[in-house]
Image: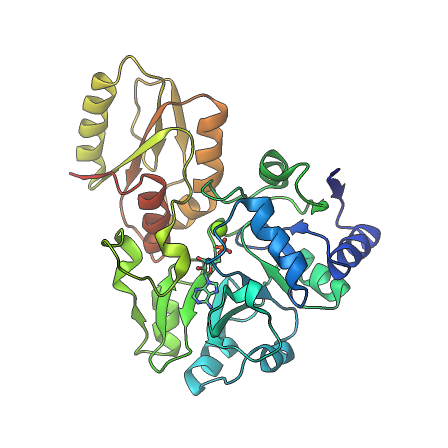
Length: 339
Ligand code: AMP
Ligand code: MG
């Protein structure tokens, strides 16, 4: 299959919309990461998303809309707390989980009785969804297990020849995925930290809680609320180790690790002015917000540069720290050294 690269001009958007409406797969930019979209009402098209990504079929997709009125068609009920969150954070990097109506097929929701709904803020995403004229089911547009794509070229690297088209809308401003909040059963629960911080959520619904599994790997036989939690994620080819704590101690520890790994191509992901004697050094920025924006593209860059092991500096500094930590720990398969 030849994958078309489309511009975000009128014609590009119209073409992308028509491809999706008629059952094709289109990767499109959002403010979080690039999504891989299909007509959410077309189960066959949705199944092709799982195939193209190599995604386990029990990991549901988020339904993207460009008009809040769609929520009442997709959801069976919208609680008062859900409404408050929707009013505050849509459009934006936020996904709400609600009891689903009968309009969405089993492929999108992987057989669950709930549906994840997101209204992206990104202008290209909104124009594409409107052009398609249907809600768009979309996970991130990476091969399953790889870091999420934040630029069109990342999607080209993973998906060329596997999907119909890629809408090139430049780089994503948030860089990590949406915050997922389950508002389908009483007190809202954060299932995945992301582009909306916990502080922002509790300013609107103070009783909102965070699922404790966010930063852990699941125990044997434990069943996650968010099926995506249990899979390997965001992993570059290199073996990543997170070194977390104050930056002076982090520097000492990473120096020691570099010494121990002298026979390998080592990379360091920094968030400080620390200098290292190493082959590949990339800076993710000094705030957690910048770290979120740059993390996935840095992980992909380490691969491009041939790093075999990567040591990532990390310290929680602002409200985006939780989202960064969640992605970093997963990309490191929970190899974390606290100093
Ligand atoms: P991705 O867009 O690639 O980040 O994948 C979507 C994420 O949303 C996955 O982690 C899913 O497990 C999660 N998700 C989608 N729908 C639901 C749902 N109904 N309930 C819980 N989690 C969901
Ligand atoms: Mg994903």
